[in-house]
Image (cartoon, rainbow over all chains, first blue to last red; front, side, top):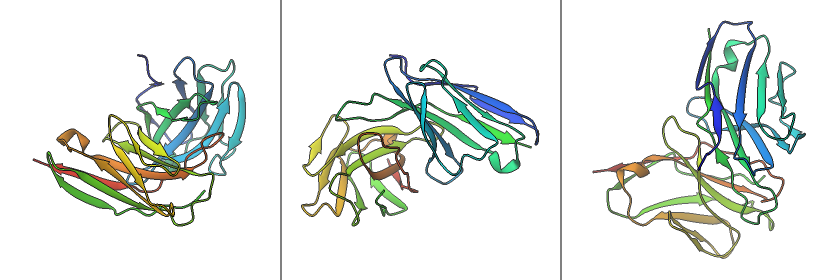
Length: 115
Length: 110
């Protein structure tokens, strides 16, 4: 059973640099979500895709953030000109829309540290 | 999305039942109650969800009050591996993104 895979697990970068994270969802899942989590807080929704269409974006997703899911399979989340406040765990989740018992499957996340 | 209220922390002895409460007094008629948990350094894991009937699966039971303003997650025989942050969330099933609160840190003690 291949779950949701995220790469890299850890990323350390300097302020002002660009970073990109990748998420590979469960293969038959048509929905993909990005969340961000800071220490001691629950995950915060950033954006989600149904197939390749980005259907919703949180106001947390500033113009420095961009997410893509070009072929409706894997997704990338890019942060441009990183700031220290971007330091967080970035979580990806996937689900299959259409099931009455829809549930999210999360990856293990990418821990970003901005120095 | 309706807001939920959970105690910040709870303790439970290994082998005993863990009962985690959640208040969601502003829940609307089409919102489900979801429970997820997050073990340290991992992503959240789905446990169970329900609308108005009680639900049971291999992991836990979910008891929802008749007025749907509160619920309880029951882990019938807690083990050390159940130590985690437990999140109670309300939301619609379809087209929804979930709004996590701060959850309850459950510590299972030997």
